[in-house]
Image (cartoon, rainbow, N blue to C red; front, side):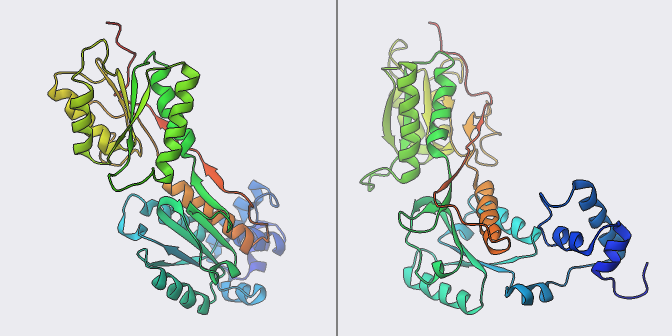
Length: 347
């Protein structure tokens, strides 16, 4: 161990590389520039010597504060969507950045004030995040610095990172069509006060309908429903009370909680899942989907990956000078097959 405060030169000597290589790796710019073997040696040498990069000096050179303002609507009140913030925070930390989260609670005046305060703190960029996919109009002061949207989109503003909801709806539908089901109903989330589907539901329905056309499933249909367990129970009792030769053999739900209700409703009618009716959810909600009996086949809503990808794009601009994407970026929604889906009944 050296007897003075370790420097990047000490790390370079220990690892047998140049100081430039040390700087690239320890400031998160080594990928594609430094071999994996050398990068591992550099990190090991830094740990052994107790070396930490001087971020203050780095920030002065590049006129940066190594901070990102994360402006959200309601995410901090939602553990589920809060995964988006966790993903963004982890990526930022790995590159030596900290996040300052400001939740404006859907209050436009409060949003403007928060953006003003964060700009005064000289944040290097903004992440504008929404709990549910929706259209937004970022504050003009926000887009004066690099900005990326997460789980939201702006027709004439910065690019957003979004879940590929249409592909998710398509995957949920194909899961049952591919197992021979043709009398399939999708319970699409829609509250009585909604004039039209919210953006995520609209895209999921489009995916379902595309899959139905491809499967030649003329009996497949979409039914407007709510978002909660009681909704699932109500519609299951109605739909599944029909004679066995006309009732649905599969129900695709716009949310896991609705799927829970469908399973409960089927049980009240003496029907078994998946022997008599298959059920698919959406969200892969923790402590619900995998714990049901049978475990629920569902589509993962990738909040964490959205946060990670949005922060990666933002820091690629702030740190590396890469251009921001001009179009929205879609993150895949994974189909998770469990025990609630089976082949179509033959009787």
